[in-house]
Image (cartoon, rainbow, N blue to C red; front, side, top):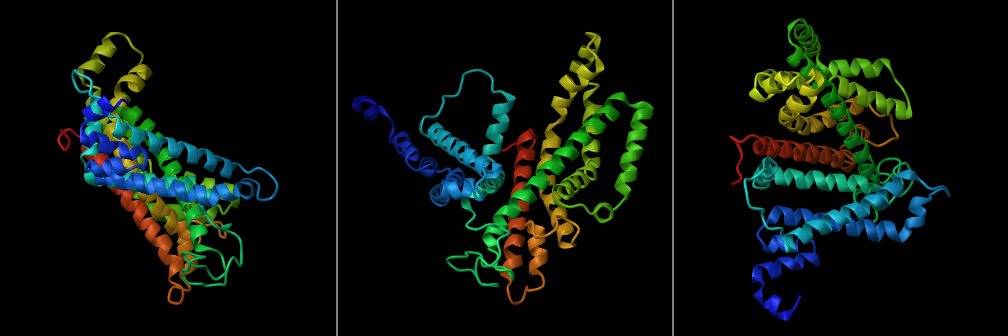
Length: 387
């Protein structure tokens, strides 16, 4: 940039370009405090992963002489997150001018969500949890299953920031690796529930008649069962090991949570199938599946997205409850629920073992709930707070 161009640039824009040196600084100087804090935290996580993980990269990638998949994925995730942070800083320093013409629906939703402070705070928290989950092999100071990494029941210290448990295992490492499993269970279980519920609700609402009554009777029957009792019964009957047990928990949580999604999608489809654009598609001779998948479902997914965002937190709570009862992921594999159960016996003498995973569950559920609230207000034009 020439000196003439630099002098012609407004001072606020020149200050915003400081974000290219320190991501988040440009947003802070522009008064956008939540995005600034989010970028600062993401940069700190990237720096921590680089200083802790890159210096021992060979030991991380090949702990037993063989190349492992998870550390490789973590390394790729580091470069991806760094690229996203850099792109956000660049967009703040060199904003793209708004195109003339009518505002699109996507732009309205994006602007409405950006104006929702609670939703942005939830998004920042979810992004931070996701980054920590993806970069865990680079950040975790110890193997989560390694015994005697320190003295048993050591309180938080410089070597063990969150202390150790009664086997001498590092609580911070177990918390990070446990978050990977807890968050993965939440995401995959909700994906199964959303897919199943959307399919059932769409078919019931579009076909109607006896099919609708039969499917809704099935939904009512399943809703009559207490969800937690059903989870305990199924996981108690089929006690598996390893990945099979994890897949069982994900499947059970997903297949016991699709009924609410089916009701939401059915109500949306019932309202949309009478709209003029659907009637026009029928008059043009389009097939039923093409109308349902191409015309109706895209317009019915907004409340499903909001529900799924809120359901991730509740699914994580259900997994924690199962693990606390000894019916979830079997120890020594760490999940937040397993860690709370392990720390229950020594809660008075070593409260840090159960307190930190409990706080992690609280923070994760709160972030997903705030994100869901923001999406709900942004997708509903009656609640949208943006311009």
